[in-house]
Amino acid sequence: MLHETLYRGYERLLTGEVKKHGLPRHIAVIMDGNRRYADRVRIMRYYGHIYGARTTEQFLEWCWELGIKQATIYAFSTENFSRPETERAMIFELITKKLDELADDPRTHERRMKVLVIGEVHRLPSDLQDAIRRVEDATRSYDGNHLNIAIAYGGQREILDAVQDMAREVREGKLHADEIDETIVSRHLYTNGVAVPDVDLIIRTGGDIRTSNFLPWQANGSECAAYFCAPFWPEFRKIDFLRAIRVYQMRECEQKQSALIRTVNMLAACGSAEIDGVVGLFRGAKSRN
Ligand code: FPP
Image (cartoon, rainbow, N blue to C red; front, side):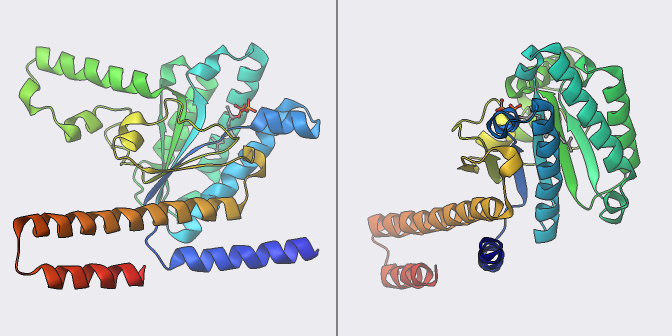
């Protein structure tokens, strides 16, 4: 009881703190540790995924509550295809159910939430492909919140498929090779015409410190902030989420400071007469942070 009261107090404190600074626009999450959680608390692994899906729902609520409009979740990687048949079938069934719930949930429509699935959808069972079509069709016209779900997704494969698409268009005369830039590549990723924007913060639970082929173009390309934490996904709490946002904010602040330092150094190197003013500006910004 005391623990719960302290937890709520700390959660309120952190919420107040993170709201004072700029928030990430796009958070991506690697939801790791469902099976290890199940093993630790001695329940069937199936329930580890069920509890994990519950955390996913809470995580999305936390994002929308704070006004973070883009979230991308890693539900099934191409590497996950090597899992035993029964486990794969169970995860696909769970994701199918969750997609159907999303399509029917009044909150999806009140929030005008657009759901987009990225990945090699053709490799998935037909029931799941149908559920993907249903939820994408039901939310296609929305532009409030954006939920991107990576299923049968691998980052290198995504880039490779984009390269092959562009090569085909060049061959057919629809695209000039020297026109290809970051925007054109983004448009050829798994997006159904709506590019998944750059990620500002990537979160991984379960203790591993790597990003496992997740959004290499959208996250690593933009050098986003990363938050790796020990809790398994089913035990990820709101305070972990808020701490992750604090890491993003600290990084933003460091980046602004180093940009200022670079500017000061550059002006000093140029021997500008305005150095004193710039140094004053820098000190002011530093004391505010
Ligand atoms: C990673 O834990 C989790 C998965 C592979 C499945 C995640 C899927 C969900 C939580 C459902 C998604 C919900 C929606 C809304 C589409 P793991 O199995 O790799 O666990 P481990 O690291 O302990 O082996």
